[in-house]
Image (tube, rainbow, N blue to C red):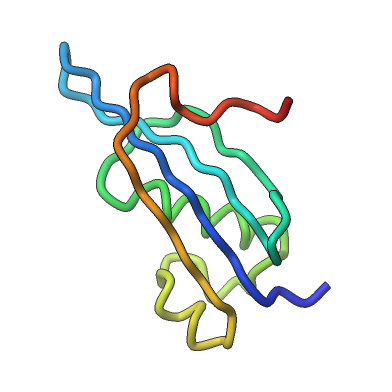
Length: 97
């Protein structure tokens, strides 16, 4: 299967008590939901980079994409999009239904 497009949806939640930030992501490949990465620690763009890493590990993206970011993916001719939004803890992405 040729990868034509990737969409990564990231939701972030901040623990007000200790100040930690957590994220979860939902990954779409060629318009189909491919994977959900549930509740993990990290901040800023960590969720996007870990999602790219997951795509590399599973052979969706070539290994040279690991650690380079989305600009390199676009240079390969793959449409890459991501969204990141703040969420409540209960709104974080869960496992598949």
